[in-house]
Length: 219
Length: 409
Image 1 (cartoon, rainbow over the protein chains, first blue to last red):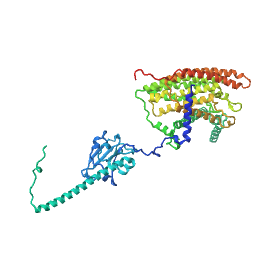
Image 2: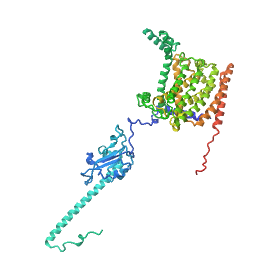
Image 3: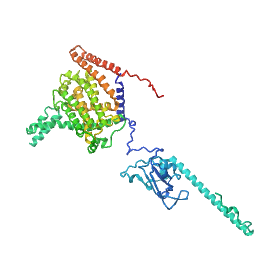
């Protein structure tokens, strides 16, 4: 009959209206500034710079290679290299950024900077409350505001951070093992050389030099 | 002098609250003769503006809260406890906004439209009986006056649409005109039944005719008769359309027309339109209450000690809640569906309802036991039969079939 659907609909909305007062499960609204849902592990919005250790500026993983700056599609990253170097996580001397700015009003959250970084220095953040009263300076984040400790990375993206840490540790172990092997080889060579020297004092050398050592390779 | 004045004001307030007649007569003799007409007019007009403007503010909040709850949301709850200061915040926002007039608009008409809309909407409140002794203007042809000033709101809506020089405004205004003229007819024809039964056009006398109780506890309201119930349903549907409320909010259908005739209005002029729309809704609900729901009469015999205006405003707010409930339930109609509903369904039913009212009137002489029940069933059959037949004839023609595509595969 005509009007049946309207009656059914009115009953449904009345059920919602009354139900929302006694059944809290119906109200799915999260009242934001007071209540917050923890961000999901897969959440991403803007990039930040990871640092190891206590001192943010000393522990910055970034080596100012500028790959992210060049790859950034909206060109929101701005880097100036510093002239003095600092050791990276394996102890090798690397450049460091004097200026590292990201304009988050331009950033489109594409994550390409994270994909291209060979040093695992830039990662995606989940902090979205970036509102401010200054729309130019307030949204241009410098390296001090961008730097966040590795422990923070572990809290927001635990799986990914563990994987990165494992990789870095493996690399460091490899480098250390190589250094050790090199040192051992050096020591061995030194020992051999010493032995040879000792032997040379008893018997004079037969050949002074080989011709191959002075021939330059053909281009 | 001042003591007399204060005494007069106190007596006036007491007479209003305690439902006594001639409340103005308590104050006017104290004043000098020159001031009396002015004060008398102000005493009639100021409460209407004050009460209905605050009811408007309250309704905007309750509507948003109610719609929120219907959709399992919380509704506004940020400004003040439970969001009760939200209307104040909205009002301040509206007042401080820039008043923009399009460069190519007809500036005079653009300015006049909201004013022309607000005035007749307020005039309509003049003839409604708010309580036993509370009627600003007891016109003999009050009902006619109400519909006459109500019809003039269409002009201001078209003024707004035309003067904005905007295609959306114009289309919205055209739709509004088509809609309001179409629905004015079922609205008036359904009210005519009440005039037939009471033999008067004065809202005050119509309410007085609905006094008393059948069998001691069923109120003698017209909504409880078959013709009155049908008339009330038709009246409610038509008044939804008259006040441009969902599901008949085509003139300002956001998804199609941005905001219809309101597109080029901002700031206080927009607020005036908004105010007039809600005041129109209150006025037409008040008329519905007066015609069918017994006006200021109490629903049960023991409750007559409560002041009569409390009952009137209680019924008015219930009507407004019904409107909000319908808005939260029914989706918007298409233009052709809207006009079909008015001309092919509501108007024939309203005309048949006149016959039902006549049958009810002429069978009033039946005196055999159970005559009231027989009359009721007869009336219900006379209006229910056409309702079912007309409904199935209009909606049964469509059958859901599998859609056949001619070109797409």
